[in-house]
Image (tube, rainbow, N blue to C red; front, side, top):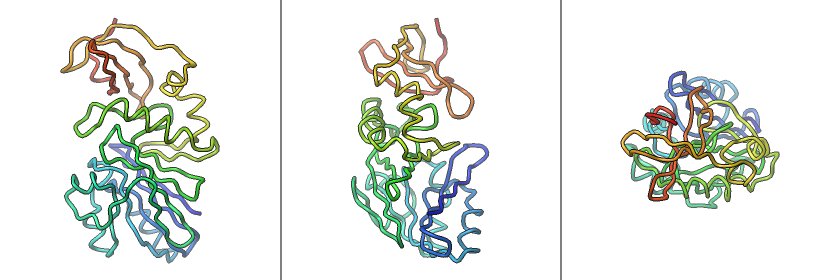
Amino acid sequence: MILQRVEQADWLSNAYLVVDEPGGKGVLIDGNGVIEPLLERADREGTDLTHILVTHDHLDHVIGLGELAAERDLPILAHRITAERVDFPVDQRLDDGEVVRTGDLEIEAIFTPGHAAGHLAFLIDGTDVITADVIFKGTVGGTMAPGATGFEDLKGSVMERLMTLPPETRMHPGHCEPSTIGAEWDNNPFVRIWRGLDSEGDENCEVNGRGEATLVLWAPDYDGTNKAWVRFPDGSDAITGGSQILSRG
């Protein structure tokens, strides 16, 4: 199997080419506006591209996909909620557990809401998983942006769906570098608290637009900034970018 990513320089979002073998059949996963190197490789090696798979509806993961699908006559596959939220036609709706087969590839859709309502991860041949914006190397996705379904959904997607994969499973996130399930199980600060290995913080903070909260975790984010897990006075939790924390202490 060939799995190649290209990263957009501003958003740091990834798009992927997955092929069963050189000159074989393959798919594109997500679009970030700079997928030309993936298309060039596919054309150079004579790859038969058969599908475009979409993890979720956010612009930095779908830009240009409608035009590409029309140019190359490729069907777009996504969750039904994602299909309702993008501005291009989705040809096939994918539900949790459905498998897309092309050449020797078997790609299973895993429903992983939290960061986005129609979010899917894609498990490829049981060895590699595209996690998109649910979990990244060293951090997790936010739950306060429009369209998010919240903290409990994201935690469940991470701990009950993705962290139950074999530890050697290679993990390919929606932004920046790859990791493995085992590495995130051991080292990801959010996962470690959810496992009961590390303690929650109790520092006071103020969240932009939401007021006072408790800062449960302040951790590095994939882009060199920080990610914050906060708890509001009503007991609800959320994960947001560190820039949304107006004060600490």
